Amino acid sequence: MTYPLYWRDQSVMDWTATVLASAPEAIVLDESAFFPGGGGQPADVGQLEWAGVFTRIEGVSAAGLVPAEGDPLPAIGTVVHARLDDVRRRQLMRTHSGLHVVCGVVYRDFGALVTGSNMEPLLGRMDFNLTDVPSGFKADLERAVNEEITRDRAILARVVTREDAMVDPDVMRTAQHLIPPEVEEIRIIDVDGLDRQADAGTHVASTRQIGEVRIAKVENKGRGFRRVRISLPA
Ligand SMILES: [Zn+2]
Image (cartoon, rainbow, N blue to C red; front, top):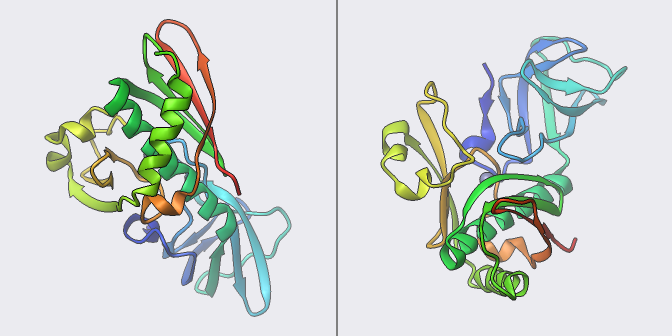
């Protein structure tokens, strides 16, 4: 029902939309840039404004945008000015793209596959299937990740058919993004020359926009399961 603006243009932070449904549990717009959450990236927050009135949006549920309790609700048909918390969203874009650079470097330099990831603004973690951790792993990884960031590789988003995605070995090796069979269109995030995976999340346009990434911690979770924690300076 809602057209997802972030799907084809991740840079949209404010826009005009029409209210299709409105209730204390959820507000539905015809077009929305609010990322609903998924792939380890939390949902966006922000606000709707109309006729000088504001509704805070605290997240996204399956039913739509979740308004703050007690905030005014726009009537169906109202044209609202919607705006994301753009500082938080930009931090999430940098963090998410930073995790993809880590994923690409760990696979290229250490041959390990990612098994899961999660993030909040400026903090992320990624789990790898890495049996032996070479000495100096943390420092080597941090250096290589920041080298790739400095190279300013383009981060491209494109939408392809399910068939095209399934024959791409780079897309299929990222085991954490298992694609449900009912999904017909798949979005690919391509850190040019480094990492390519199916991903619905939001990313910066090139690696330099990530800024510095610190490898905060490498944890041993047992049986070849390593957790890499990153942090980004604000
Ligand atoms: Zn991702």
